[in-house]
Length: 341
Image (tube, rainbow, N blue to C red):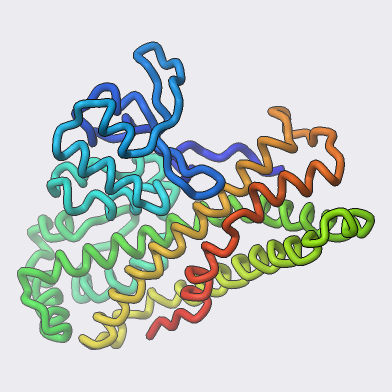
């Protein structure tokens, strides 16, 4: 069994005091949770941290006198398909200022850990921007900090103007455009790291489902068992094959700016913006299923609990198999994704 998931990497629940989003103190003591049936609820707590039950968004709004922007933000978050930092930012984009959105980010330690994934993706972009300069990027660098370097500022601006000309984008907008693409690339890099840490548990779950599939003695009592376990194994395998293939393909992004055109840039931006949302949802989906399975059949010391195959099947059908179809479209989207790299 894999190590316990870092709280920042849990996509299916979000403590509402994680970032400064709501004015309501009562609401900020709560958390949003995606249940095993993928329905979002607000898990409410009182001032002493004692649970007082789950609520829908409508029930919370009726019980608490929320301000207009608190209501808008809550409803928007409840419609998100994942509560990772990037999905939260996307959900709240229309209801928060740029300064407010800026504080919704990964902690510094996680950003540094993520740098290994980002290096390949940012290298091609930085190579073009820094062409003709003596700047050596050894850590995290933003365009703004590079532009503050008086010695190389002229050469960097010249490169940015050339890129903007190729992309048919105003020079004053190029930093915004590239920053947006960089953030999406960073999101996909982050999802890859979380997916990599989830993979051992997903494979272990598929082994358990396969063993369940082989319990032929139960087939007469549960006629749908063979088809259901087959469907679950196929969904898990397709997820692994699809995401592994996508991430392998995406590593080529470091060469993206070597031969850039407006069409390639537009296509790349539009494609990855759709892709990263789908990947976040897929990862969140399997986290929910794995969390349910882990809570039922493993103890806090990482040892399996005793259970019968009948108990495993009933739990499997109610949790893992339930709503399995909801990731099909997202997996198919990533499976057929073509990146013009």
